[in-house]
Length: 366
Image (cartoon, rainbow, N blue to C red; front, side):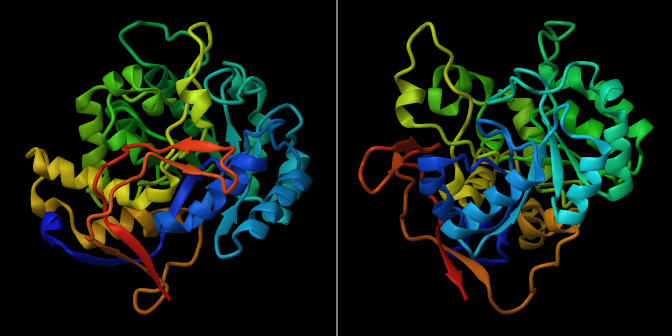
């Protein structure tokens, strides 16, 4: 397959294993966009206001999401805080909760009640229960506070903790979310098969310069050097089942992103949900165009592995049918990404990443 020459492409539905669907009006606007991005399965983040720390809240949230778009499969998670005990983990497993998300304190949106730096000691009984009941631990892998050296990122500063966690709980299924450095990829590779990593679309095309100059490109973890971006691209095309898609699509009202006062922090998050699959493919096309990737490095099988099959396999979900519907169909029609999406009454607008970029049009074959 020569990706830049392809006019029509059929793929199994994507599985987006890291989404922020928010709540209230933002939720109502964003959830219907999931299918537009070629996705039928999502792992939902719990950092709402207040965060989802009980099984009842997680199931209520799942019910709300299903009422908006019942054709999507929602994998639910709890927010790790002191209320999550080994007993809660046992109940969560029985209730069908998929994972527990660990946020270090203060590293990203709604993480103020996250875990302290000594989380491994504080939560070892919980991690032991998760290992026993086969609940996934989803890690926002950044060090809370300043890194020990200005030469390393918050993500790189966190990686020794990942290795300690894996050494102590080798059967605990862990996801290092939104890998943004070559070092993070190496750390995941160095662990056993129970440790994997998600890669976003936006970390395949953004660098730190973009994130520091464009509020719509500002996110956590901050995109890093071009060499880190290129290492992520290579991982996507490698066919390595340790790495799969998690968009970390994170919507914020456009006014909050671009009208923030000088004494206020820009909210972290890049919104990609309506074009989640298309943006991954666009980033690979661009990598070929600048000579970083060879045409034969991007194959249909490797695209399917990254976007769909590897994530489902890790989460012990059925493999999508290899023949017949449902499938997503991508075609070149001249479509470009709009600047934003808006609510029907016009009171809410959310800015999109890569406005005006050319992308495949996407439809569903059912």
